[in-house]
Amino acid sequence: MKTIVIGATGATGKSLLPLLATSSEVESIDCFGRRHPDFTHQKLNSHQIDFSQPDDWRDEVQDDCLPAWEQP
Image (cartoon, rainbow, N blue to C red; front, top):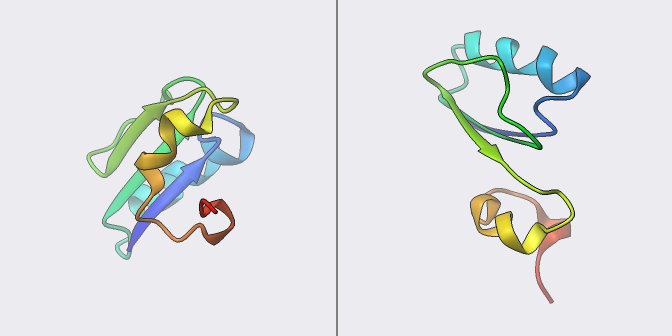
């Protein structure tokens, strides 16, 4: 399974990344945050973004299942 974590450097994201990384069901983790996480792992792909500018990073999650973000 491919996963995405938005807010990866917040309290929940910091706890979630190690759990996902050690799961045998997870093949990759794309994480998005205002800064890169301190946590590193071979499954982890980190994206530093400005949350107030979704058009700048929308393409990074385009293939993921986020129906609420579909453009009209």
